Image (cartoon, rainbow, N blue to C red; front, side):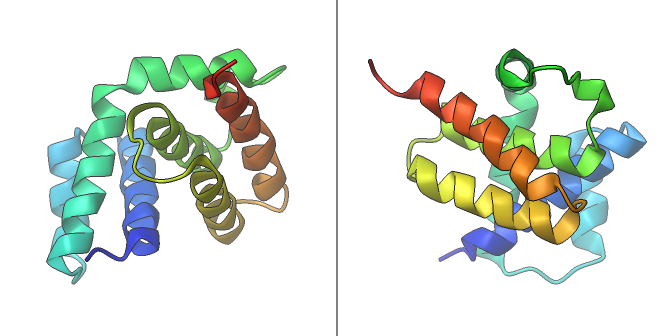
Length: 136
């Protein structure tokens, strides 16, 4: 059983690395795991999340941009953008985790790795994305 929180934290770190360095997923994941000991189930979930974001990046970024009033993606803090991309991917393309849990995890990770206002910023934006996904 993967440590889901740890896998999400690792995925945010890899997405950050890819964003800053311009590395492809294979290279970024390889370098990330080379430097860390991570249990195989957690590693597998991290890889699935990173590759999922990469595969659906255009749709994920469009969902973020649609609800990011007065914010362009390229002007967001890289950590916040990485957390948002991961959580949006989970909300839009993975149905196994309840939306409230996705939001909660994203806010906690944003608080841990981001700036003072990251938790509030991520929460507000993801809540808008979540509401668009709700039926009716």
